[in-house]
Length: 278
Ligand code: PDD
Image (tube, rainbow, N blue to C red; front, side):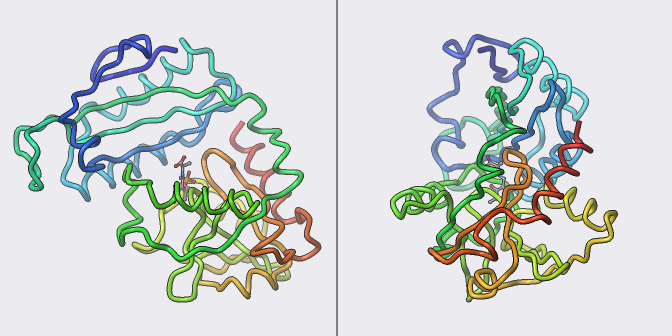
C-alpha cells in the first residue's frame, strides 16, 4: 500500500512519524474517515468542512489546502486501486519537546492511508442487523471534535464483544448519546428520532445526509434525546456512519427492537443513501 506522510507518497513500511509527535504522546490530533464506493469519495466536502472545524477548535491549521486534500485522497484511491473502502486522514499538532501547553514551534503532521473493504455496500450485517449493549458514556466532554482519543470507544467495543453483541450505545444522564463510532436513531411509527446536536456527540456527516434524505422522502424527524427503554420499545433502531452507511440495530441489552429484525425505514434509508452516493 502507498500512504501519504507530510508531503510524500511512500510505501507503508517506509512511512515515518516522530516519537515526539503530539498525536502519539497526547492524542493531540483529529481525523476523518471518508468512504469510497465504485472508486468515488462519498461526501468529501462534508468531511473537509468538519475537519476544518475540529482543527480550529484545537487552534491548529491544516498543513495543506482543501483542494490539495482532495487531490491526495483521489491519488491514494487510484494508486491503491480502492473500489470499495475508505480513506483515513489524520492531522496532529506535530513534534515538539513534551509539554502540556501547545508548543509554538510544532508543525502539524498530515497522514493519509486507504483501507480496501470489498462488499462494503452489500454488507451482510445490513440484512442481519446489529445487537448492541448500553454502557455509560465515559468519554471527555467535547465529542463534537473528532479527536484521535478513542480509547473509551475501543473499550466499549470490547465490552460489547465480551457480552456477545456487536457494538455499544453510550448513555449519559439517562439518555443515549451515540454508538462507539456511529450516531444512534430509533423509529416510532413514522417518526425518526435521533439526538440533537451539541458537544455531547459527533456531528456525523452521514447523519446530516440521512436526515436531509429522510426529509426529502417526507419522513418525520425529531432531533431529541431518547432513553434505552424508549429505544427497546421502538419499532426500529439503526446507526449511521461513513463506514457503515445506515445499519439496522435489532437488539438492545438482550431485548428485541420491534420484530427483532431489520425494519423498513432503515432499509429504505440505506437504499436511498447508497443510491444518492453513487
Ligand atoms: N466514526 N459518532 C462517533 C463517535 C464516530 O466516531 C463516528 C464516525 C460517527 C459518525 O460520523 P460520520 O457519519 O461522519 O462517519 C458518530 C468513524 C467512521 C470512525 O471512527 O471510523
